[in-house]
Structure formats: structure tokens, C-alpha cells
Length: 427
Image (cartoon, rainbow, N blue to C red):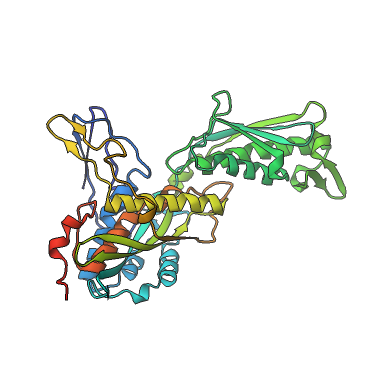
């Protein structure tokens, strides 16, 4: 059951949606309730739906595993599914839940995990937690324009935006790879309404759809270049600024001529999302220590194993994921809105009163991307990954705190006052 509040005509938080897709099971019931509140508008934050929903679902998975006397990783493996549980004819385009769970457990040293409250290091109670990460891969029409100039260099134009997520870089990479050029020979122009319409940034759908639109425009430009040069477009390669077919070759500059060339196209997916369930997955592992005297929680190390198709830029993708993992620590341990119920406003509405993680709160973070491609996702065989890095992190922290102390807290954030009185006696 998901409860949320908003202004009149506002939408709910879809926190139960991943419960319908993540694990196998013949029977389940989910419901969403929305209350009208006299508070500022409620709207999307990073990974709406899955991020808050998994903070509850993945605690429940751990509790069920404990009741059954099973290891939490193995319990999740047992409940894997390769189809949409509600529509079994609709298969996942790709789903490697077992692989990322097993890879993460091995890499994190999961076998060393002990019973709740059993591991002590001086005044610290130490535990490990795991949670699944899940985020849907959204397909949206995206267009782009590619222009080839007389110097054999190209410019890409699309109204996609870059909000710090690396759009300029990944779009340039895509165009350079398609046209056989170096990154220094590609100019990217974004964020102008006169450019072809793209999906935009947000929802983990931006880069995947935008690069697919660039791919489509580059395919069209390649065909036009081959036709102009009299080459067979089915037997032509673009590399090092050259176009080659058999024993013939020409430079892109020659093909462009004095006037240059231009191609514009868009990617459309038809009913692909009806044929396949497309999602991204992660395994989040956390080690946390709780001070046996004060109840203070310290996250010691974190690991995310992500499965999101072809990773187009591992460096920027890793940056996205570690930022999301940091947000997950904040959600689990400190972030909370205080509401004045008499006057209907958020009391801690600025960073002077709203607590978020700082450098001292964030330990060693490791990110692993499974080497995979998803041929059903897009021409790039890639999927979004940024918001996946957040989904499940809060529950992994909560499960680690429980394993450390033997005290279950279901009310986020997990502040020391919520478990201090129930901590094991200090010897």
C-alpha cells in the first residue's frame, strides 16, 4: 500500500509499481492512495516510485528471508523471474538478477556476514545488508540533426539538455563512433527549441533515447554520403575521417563538398514496450557500524553491481551511480521533512535545516557494471543507469543496521533515537 499527499489535481507517488514486477509470485495485491494536503506541491525526485518503494519492499524481503531461515541473497535468487509476473507472455528483454546478486555477494565478502547483533569491533556493532535495485527503462521518441561541413567535421543538434549528466559527452561519442571521427571533430549543440525534439533529461531515459536519435540521424547521413559517392551503402565503412567501400575510398570532406551535407531523423519504438518488459537492475551491498553506546550509525563501505545493457561511458556512468548511492545514504539516515501541521508548510525548507550527507558520511564506494548488451532496448543496446544507483540503497543500509544490532527500524530516517533503547546491552 502506498500513501502520499499532494495538492488538488496532483499525482501520487507510485511507490508500489516495482512490487508488481521485481519478483515472481502468483498472488499479490498493491494499492495507491492519494490525500489532498495543504502543503507545497509534491513532485518527482530522483527515481520517483522505485526509490521510495524499494526502501519498504527490500526490508520486507529481508524479513521474509529471516522468517524462512534463508540467506537474504538466496531468497531473492529463488524468487527470480524472466517474465512480467502479471503478464507471463511478456518477457524481460534482459534480466540478470542472479548474476549481479552472486557477483556482488562474492565481491563484497557476503559469506563473512554473521547473525544479527553477533559481530562486534570494540564499541561498534557491525553488520551487512543487501537490497535489489530496480528501475524501468523508458522508451521515448527522440530526434537529432547531424551536419557535415566542408572540413569533414560534424555538428549534432538536438533539444536534449545537459543537467550535469554528461549529455554533451555521450552524444559526441555516439556521433563520432557512427561517422568514424575523433571527439575533437564533433560539436554538440543542445537545449534550443529550434532543434529536433528529444526525450529530455530525467527519469533515467535521457541519454539512452537521445543517443538513439543521434544514431538514427547518423544512419541517414551515412546513407546520403554513400549515395553521393556512388558507394554501396550496405558495404561501406566510416573510419579515420574516410569512407571506404571495397578498394575505393574518399574523405568525409570530399563527400561534403563546399556546401556540406545534413540529415535529420528520429528514433521511434513502436510497440516494443508491449512485447518486452525493459528494466535495469542492481545489487546494493552495504556494511554499517552502530555505536553500542550512542546508537550512532556509520556506513563503512558500499558496493553497487549494475546491469543496464551496454555502458556507453563507464566513467560518467560510475559518477552517476556513486552520486545516487550518496543520496541513498541520506534517505536512509538523515533526510526528513518536518511539517508544521498547523500552518501547512515545511519547517526545514533550506540546507541550513535539512540534513544531507557530507564527505565525512560517505565511505568507500565501489561500482561494478556487468558486461552485457540489450539488443531489444535501442540501437545502442544500452539503457539508463543514473537513477538505478539510488533504487534499493536505503533498504540496503537499513538491512545492514538491522544485521549489526538485531533491532529493526521501519521508519526512515534511521536516527539513533529510534533504536537506542533497544540496542544489545554493552558488555
